[in-house]
Length: 287
Length: 267
Image (cartoon, rainbow over all chains, first blue to last red; front, side):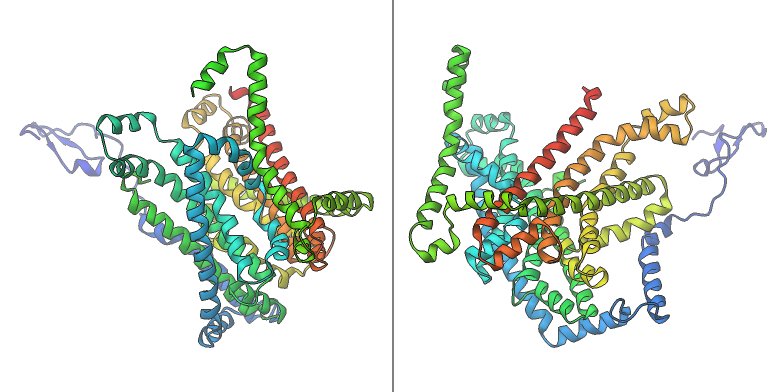
């Protein structure tokens, strides 16, 4: 800014420029029409429809449009939650469900990484295993439930096997993809620098594989959770799915709703957790 | 790698023969697995309970085909899937379009969509069962939901990500809203729509079968499997599982072929 021209609040726009002679020239640009600034409110706008739905829900149940068996008021769901939580039913069922999920997912995940790495690196494995792998991958886990019930009974083994099946293939495919996508040049660079195997793994293979692997794990965990709930609905004596199934049989809609909300929140938490892990492990991949 | 290089230099016939023999090696593992299965099946009665002899599976397939059971249940499942798929895809595309064009619709629909989507789909079955009963509406509803989820997202993203230059060309030609939607936006969003369909179709099919496992009424492959499960008819279950897998695979291949056919002009 020099002494001859003075910009008066140019940042606001639509200001005039004072010349030394005191004459006023044309405005820089047409002044913006003043608008009400809603921007700080749009952050809260997403609340509108859930609140609307909740209000409608309360209003409809107050007006008794439907019977209690069809639509329970939100307060009843809250009370049912307290009831099953305090009685130890929900914590117990959750614990067993999460234990099944964790165990199956760990076994399936480890096996999936191993299988994927084997298929990606060994030519022999490619030749002998790949066709079998490709066929088995296509079998929907849910359609295997009756078959697995006959093979493994309806005990714990069934749930673990089902989760292992639903985890192993997405993880193996992701690993295969991740290892396959490591640019050859990177490995060459590693060799030129004579990096040791550990450094090569840490600096080249790990960063190149982990994004695909984490995405695969996220998909696998989401699917496993759905499959587990389905198995528990179908054949189980415990677990969150079983709680919902009993609720359905006893026409306790409030308990079923509690189950839906709890499984939904957990599914959300798993997804967010792995996304957070993605950001924490891969700081260069911010989206 | 050396072998592949020299094979490429040889005459195409030998190359073909070598490849044919090489591809047979992939069959060794499945044959071994089937051998194990067959061995277990013929060991003793206890094992034969779960590991049915493979010849019996063939006989079961023949029987199911002959008495029309397979066809009846297959038809039930396929009709139900088509109905649910059509409903879900139509509603999904509708919501996606609405969300892409209206900010109000976006702020209203998106939070509900995102939160309901978190619930494992089959975890909704007890709720749907209480509301819609165990019959056809409940099953179709859950299939429609399975198709709805991916379609909303792919439609919305497809329309949002249309290149601004295409829109400008539309404006230059003075197209009105409907014309620009039909001529510019829809063709540009089509690949994304097909990507959604690629997810929606197999998912709807699996959910249809799973829904039949859970809602045990009416004809369907899932139902046939559940009946076979209570009667410990492993052969019938194996026929059904194989059929479900093959059909799911065929469906996703069909979408993929359709997609490349429609996108010929892109190449």
